[in-house]
Every structure is written in structure tokens, then in C-alpha cells.
Length: 169
Image (tube, rainbow, N blue to C red; front, side, top):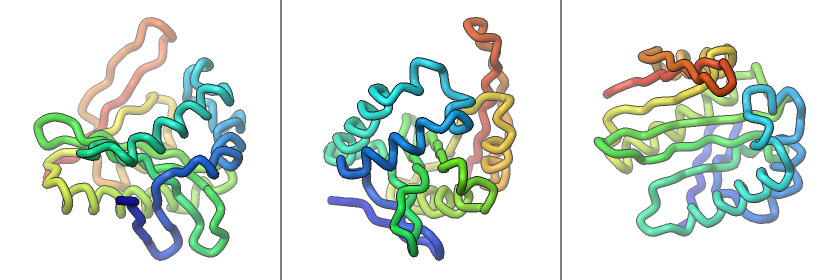
């Protein structure tokens, strides 16, 4: 069953293969790629991701919700949000917005709706996000969602730190 959620300004829906052009345009922007490893920035990698998101939407039972953020008025793909069920009634979350849509509260609006859905449907007790320490915008979104920093891990491979933020209910 396809998932479709709405907020005041947004539609959150499952990916479909027709989203490929908009997805590749969004993920190819150099500013969007700033906090991703180089190998995860190619069009081939992102096309594979989109195919995986489409497959995950059809899995039973469904445990991964990677949704398109679509503008309610424009019907354009402007981002993505994720809610992935983990063990012990936890879920990891993630999000990404087109560079020209950042800074407008859209990620908070979309994630708030998806988190509410996940808690209501699955009884999730804790949500968490992991992001690069330098990604201050993502950290700010997480904090606006009520997540608090709980961990800082050092990654020796690229000398970048990862922050874990979480919120338990």
C-alpha cells in the first residue's frame, strides 16, 4: 500500500521511477553533496538509491520509509525524508532538501509529520539521526525536532566526526 502524507505545504509520498530526473538533479548539486562521501555522489549511485527506495516501499513487512518531499502547490520533488525501523522500538531518521529550498522550515515540517506517523503506526520509543559534525544545518533541524546530541564518533578514514542525536518518548 502506497504511503501518502500531507502537511500544510508538502506532500510526502513513496518514490516512483518517474522521479529519477528530479532526484538526480537535486542530488547532483555540489552544495547538496557537501556532506556525502564522493562515491555516494555519482548519478549511477543515486539512480541505484532511487530504485532501492521504490523496492523498499513494496516490502512486507515494511520497515523502511524513504519518501519524496513534494511541494503541494508546485508538485515538484524538493527533497526526501526517511524513517527506518530498527531494533528495540527505535527508528533512524534522515532528510535532504534541494539546495534552493533549504532554510524555510520544510525539513522540520516534513520530518515532524513522518515521525508522528512512525510513532503512531509502530509504537517507536526512540528516534535517532547521525550526521557529520560540520553539517550545522542538519544538526539544527534535528534539534528543532527535539533530538539531543548523545554521541560523537571520530572516523579515522576521512577525519570527519559523526554526531548522533536522539529523542526518546
